[in-house]
Length: 290
Image 1 (tube, rainbow, N blue to C red):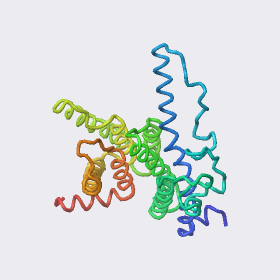
Image 2: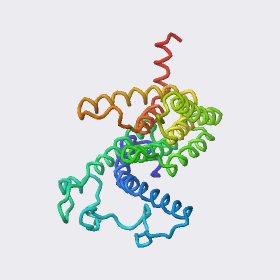
Image 3: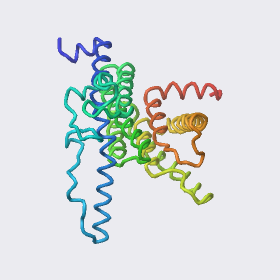
Image 4: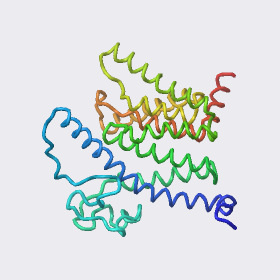
């Protein structure tokens, strides 16, 4: 029996393998989450220096990519070995500390790995073996990385969001989740809707309520799910964001004026909608009496 036939006929095995793959991918996503903002910052600095005609002063910094150099402890510089880089297990075995200097390792690392595995398992359970699951896994992992970066840096990198948008349109050619017409309208309506809200808010208050990355992200989500699910995404993201903000204020006394990234809530709503959007819309329409 071919491996594809085995995975198609054994949903449990497929889910287990996808969960294990999710752990591995989650480890790489941690690299993306940490390094991509630094790479973007270096690029911005280089562009500013070039535009100002100033001499470059940071040439001594080692080249930084998603593939190198090897990961190391930020405290002591200890290079992470393969045995110290096993997703989740290494963190638990080392009790959340560097094996060399015993400095604490941030909770982000096991959390991202666990989320990557759990969300991947849900995707495998929902779609089963096939192209929809493969596309949805990529969708999931890009959203997870973008959300974590937005939480840390209040930045939604074009390097993640724009490829997600174009890949969503490409997926709609087949189509796996929606047709191409709905995907194109969804991308346009997603961008223009938040852009319009942003412009209206800025005219009324003189402040910027959100960033352009949010417009692009909603455009990408519209390309994946179609324009029919945009209202569901916006409502879900607003509800989740409001609840999360209230919880932070109550538990941590968060300043109400402090900015809070909206991207992670959009991403969560978009992910939920891709998996269960039709059911959510059906319940919503029944509740309205249609």
